[in-house]
Image 1 (spheres, rainbow, N blue to C red):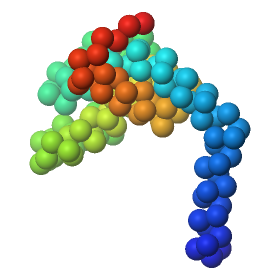
Image 2 (cartoon, rainbow, N blue to C red; image 1 turned 90 degrees about the vertical axis):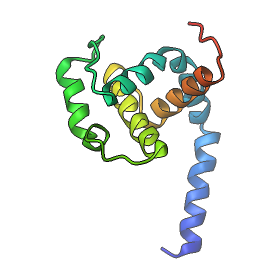
Image 3 (cartoon, rainbow, N blue to C red; image 1 turned 180 degrees about the vertical axis):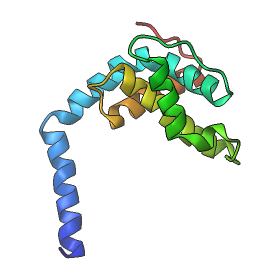
Length: 128
């Protein structure tokens, strides 16, 4: 496939995402989920600090340990910058959300976490 054809195919997928209504569905799911995922940001930060959080709902101790195994660099002290830590914390929080809400895809989980983080950072009150 040529470069031009690849670009055209990419734009076609993007247009279909919005035209099909899937973008609206994802937006609505992110909006609803953002209210529910704020605790997972704190849980990921506690895990990175070496504290084992209390399991909640679908989050069993085994699931939490599995996440630690998946992101060992976050826990071994080898991350050097704040940006590296944020990326890894987003990954861990995403895994926690996906364990709790198994039907949620990665993109929606990350978007909901980022929206919840922005709300917390700006001092917005999250209301269920």
